[in-house]
Image (cartoon, rainbow, N blue to C red; front, side, top):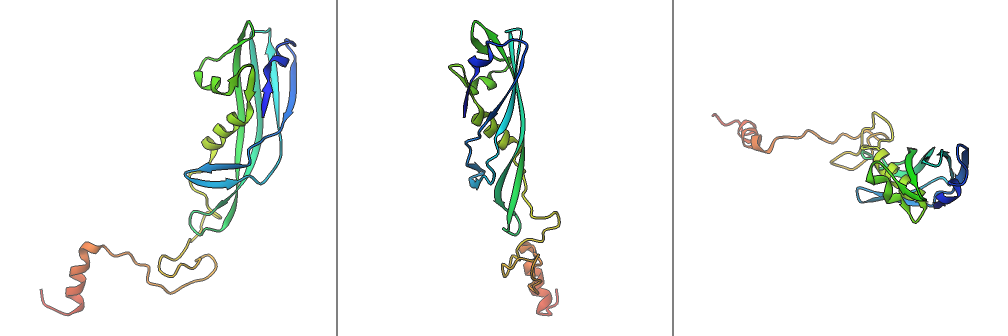
Length: 174
């Protein structure tokens, strides 16, 4: 969703709120697509300080469907979103201290979805787990070890030491 910033330039030293719909339906993180579960809008606060700076802020949470990294069960992932921008104004031209924020402003319009997507990528958890002590899938039989206990031998052996194991198993003298 794009917001026309020119409407906030007319009113100086007044705080205005605007509810903005979020048009993000899917997000791709590390090559995996995730669908958004909620349709909640974000309420943005705009403050024009003496016609020189436009402060923009807003907070929300977005909820996505994802899979547990260990057991592949479905998990809801909530990503906190905190938008904040300080935009300089001179002769109806917008500028920022850092050039990153200018990516979201074009022809006097603020790209709210672009700002939110950047926050989603920054706030996405590095590891998604259904619970902190998730046991994951058995590497041998593939069963979910949170639901079913299996008797598979999951001991990982060092392949460099397998020759010694062969010697001991065949009862040969060294």
